[in-house]
Image 1 (cartoon, rainbow, N blue to C red):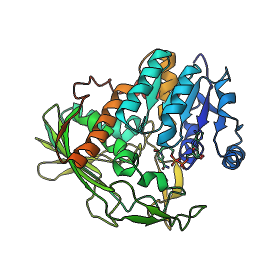
Image 2 (cartoon, rainbow, N blue to C red):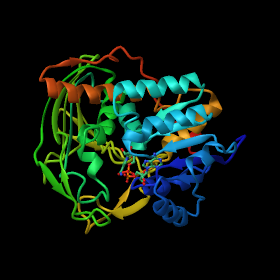
Image 3 (cartoon, rainbow, N blue to C red):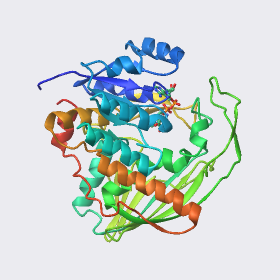
Length: 389
Ligand SMILES: NC(=O)c1ccc[n+]([C@@H]2O[C@H](COP(=O)([O-])OP(=O)(O)OC[C@H]3O[C@@H](n4cnc5c(N)ncnc54)[C@H](O)[C@@H]3O)[C@@H](O)[C@H]2O)c1
C-alpha cells in the first residue's frame, strides 16, 4: 500500500452523514479529514460529534492534502458543488442522483473529463456481498436464462423518519429519484442495460405532515411530485421487469424487494438499499437454497439503528456507505474506472428520468443510453483491495 490513509472531505452534513460515518472504520485506507455544511450550527454539531474539523467549501477546495470529496448535499446542489470540486482538482463521489436531470448529470461527467478528474456516484450497494453473490449465481446459470424480474419498494414515505423531508416531495424528489437508483442499478447490474420504459404515476396524498422529531416536526408539506410509480422495463437482453416505487402504501405483503425469474428457477435478491442479506435460489419445485453472505467482505451486519419504519424496533444493518468513496480512491491509485462509474450512473439516471417522462406523457420511451457498454463488476480481489486487505 503506497498511501495507507487517503484524506477525504465531506460536503453536506445532513441525515445521511451518519450512515457514511458508521462504516468509515471498515475502510482503513481512507480518513475523513474535513466536513463542510452551509448551516454553521449543524456544521459545528457534526464536527464535534465526529471529532473532524469543519470548514468552508473554499478552505476545503484549497487544501492540497485533500484530493477526494464526497458530495452529500441535497440533489439540487450536487452539480454546482461537483463542478467546483473538479475545477479545484478534486475527485468526487456523489450521492444520488448525480444531477437532477440527465442533461445536468452529463454536464457533471463532462466537467470531470475536462479537468481530468475521476467521478463515481451512488449507489455503491452493488459492491456489497449479497449483490456480488447474486451476480455470481446468475453468471453461473443458477436460474438458467433470465426471462423477467419484479422489483417492489412500497412504504409510506419519508415524513415520519427524515428530519427535513420537504425536498423529497418536490420535483427532483419522489420515490423513483430517491430509492429508485438502488433498485434500477441492481436490475441493470444483473440483467444488463434497459432499452425502453413505460410507466404510470399518481399522487396518493396531496399533503404530508412531518411527524419525524426535529426542527420541522408538524410542518405541512404540499406534495409537488407523484409519489407512486409503476413501470415496465424492457432490457436489451430481451428480459422484462416490473418496478413499483411508492410512498403511498402503509403496509404490503409482497415479500422480497427483487426477484429474478429464469428458465430453471428464481433468484430472490436481498434489499438493494443495503450491502448484505441472504440471496435465495428456488428451483422449479420450490426447493430453496439460501446463501449466507455475512462472512463475505462487505457482508457482515454492523450498524445498530432504529428501524426507519418501526421506530420502536432496533435493527442491525449491513450498510457500508463509504465503499463507493473507497472504490474511487482505489480507482485513482489503480488508474481504472470506478465500479460505480459515470457510465452506469448515467444509464440508471436515464432510466429514472424516462420513467417520470413516460408517466407524464403516458407513452413508452426509448432510453438515449440504451446502447451503453456497462463496466465490468468487481471481483473478490477488487473488493479485498478496496477494503484495504
Ligand atoms: N437520508 C438518507 O437516508 C439518504 C440515503 C441515501 C442517500 N441520500 C442522499 O444523500 C444526499 C443528502 O441527503 P440527506 O438526507 O442527508 O439530506 P439533508 O437535507 O438531511 O442534508 C443535506 C445537508 O447539506 C447541507 N447543504 C445544503 N446545500 C449545501 C451546499 N451548497 N454546500 C454545503 N452544504 C449544503 C444542508 O445544510 C444539510 O445539512 C441526497 O443526495 C440524498 O439523495 C440520503
